[in-house]
Image (cartoon, rainbow over all chains, first blue to last red):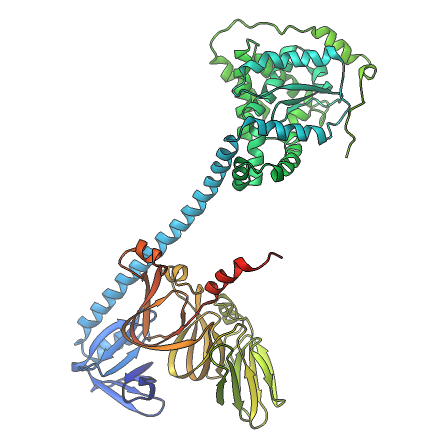
Length: 385
Length: 227
């Protein structure tokens, strides 16, 4: 039975050398009939078969001198051709199929390798930028931290008036001064500002400005517990977590432009960002790092680090009574696991004779608990935005 | 349908003259001017044929429009002027029943006997051919009009032929191409400014464009002022 497929023909006798055609498998050979009615036949015995074309599945049947080519890419054509030619063209068709399958496999492999390479490039780029930003900002001198931190301190809303009582401020400063020699980075000048506010919180800006809220002092039962919180906040400054956050937020190019000295344009953006960063939580990694570094600093300063974990536990117990006021805890999530990791770190520390903090804690608490308004100086408190 | 290509190759336009009852399908926005004796129908399917939403979406992936405009003449000797969006050439290809593979966005107009579809070119070719992810597949019989950026030149391939990526306008489906390097080494190819090329093999007609929009954009872009 004759079969007809859609295909085409190449012949020098055709205008343009090519025409679409109905391809027929005749008893005498492969026939092609163009829309103009011209017919061409290639006997099966003279037929040279090749596979190719756009999709690689097209069958080209050429005559002996290759002056005539009939082609067809119908999916059923190869099998029909094999049957019509009584198997005489099977070897050539098999070679064509094998070649096509080989090319198809190579193309698939090539495509898969390319896709994998692109995905790897994207992932590597993401981590490269993150690592690059961290490296770039850590390469900056510490003086940049102070520049950004001082500017942020001047312009930010501290949430209450500054306390000017020399006993209170002096006590907090002496705690910080006791810990400061154990800092991992030199050149940070820690300066304590005490702010009247019920919130139990403290934070350190890049470069050493520290803010301690009176609520924290009122809720601590010993100066060592205050030292625990302050050492954690000092660790954020010494480990340069704030400046790293700026680097991650502004991108690696901002870090590089800071590195090459173009500080002016980026400082403003960094200050804005730092104001938000100081009141929002750091990443979990940074918090854990600050805990560990805080414990190390306390131990090096011969202050009992267990007070840090004690204060965490105290706050955790009290938190249920006055939710929302424990800002320090609320910005430091998952404190149960943090307490556990601090306790674990304490167990591994070498034994040392801890020395008490030499401040008049009773007088500090008395002045805080007393009507503190009498000792407040509002003269240089920035206006709220 | 009688056609005339004018102002070639830089700012080509095509003047089509249709008799009563004849139709032509054009890319959306291709019409520049026309006689008053045309009815215009906008659909996502071929005139009198299948398609619809699926083919419309496939056309969009290939860089063409979801919709097609069908112009049907209601009177004798009605003229329709069409042109591409970018400067460049227009070519006429008389289809006689075969298939022509066209780069995305180069299809301009065709007779109603021609089916317009999209076809995937494979991941490797999609990434490195300098063309779109999909190609436009034109098959059937009748007049086909394609446009390019720059002028179009035809090449009769019988064996092998090399074209730089981004310079293919169309090729007959009897041709196949692979992505390869221009020189013997990849580094040499890149340093020579050619990088990867399309290596054609088989027998058939290949149509190339003298320029391509991405290269022009790369030259022009840095000189433009920011908004």
